Image (tube, rainbow, N blue to C red; front, side, top):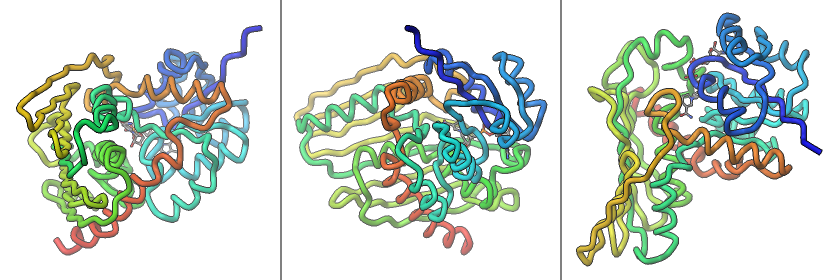
Length: 333
Ligand SMILES: NC(=O)c1ccc[n+]([C@@H]2O[C@H](COP(=O)([O-])OP(=O)(O)OC[C@H]3O[C@@H](n4cnc5c(N)ncnc54)[C@H](O)[C@@H]3O)[C@@H](O)[C@H]2O)c1
């Protein structure tokens, strides 16, 4: 007998909801039945395109709909309280990054269970997966350290038009928590739990416009391995994220969809991976489909989320430690 398709809903019908909505069917094999936004025209627009029912709030949607999976696509500060509301009703959650904006929220999130999925879609990047495999083979020897660079641009209206970005209360930070968190997450995935960090944050471009950082640099120790990390939204334009990993026997570089290896014996390798087209903006990458496919498979199998709370703990811990230090340097600027 055919299983009934899962019923999905979206709360927050802004930019990223436009990526989730088509993938609910295409990657998740589920049906988008409802969507909610405090801006009714946004909920209506998304609902019209997918044959769903629009609601003016999460509460109204939960009161009227029977939902299996809730996609949380709202401003950062709302992720945890909305996940709690869904969880209390037995609804599974697929949450956009970042999972939390503070330690208090992390405590609350940790109290939920491991069925909650978190969208760190860049973990599905093929060049990153290839690098993980090469490191796991042991051929490269010990990891000595890494370097990661995110040089992007966000203009004033990106922050001022949104009503939430650029504020501590709703975004919980700037470049690090919103854009560079993906790259920080990949670094943690490669090097493990950090043992110490030294962070500087500042506002180079939008002083008086945003409260939060537009630039962050850090030296992060992962035991004996040392990473330097630099991210900014104050560049002239967006350029591809770069991650370099130095090992005893080779240096590996990821940029765009490419993997490059420079072995100490002079051998080099350059692999360009086919990557599915990005839905939405290029810099969001194209991993949402794979991430949602995996997540929905786990839901149907009654298994923990493939990227769940315990899988993001080290990234969150590092990010929050960087904000503890960065808020101080930002204040002193
Ligand atoms: N994974 C990625 O690469 C990626 C890319 C972009 C955005 N995101 C994440 O997606 C989330 C949303 O970002 P966005 O760029 O789509 O923002 P957005 O401002 O375009 O959309 C957010 C929507 O939430 C709505 N909203 C605000 N408060 C609400 C409430 N109480 N109830 C219901 N709706 C409410 C807003 O009206 C808006 O339509 C953020 O967490 C962001 O970090 C992730």
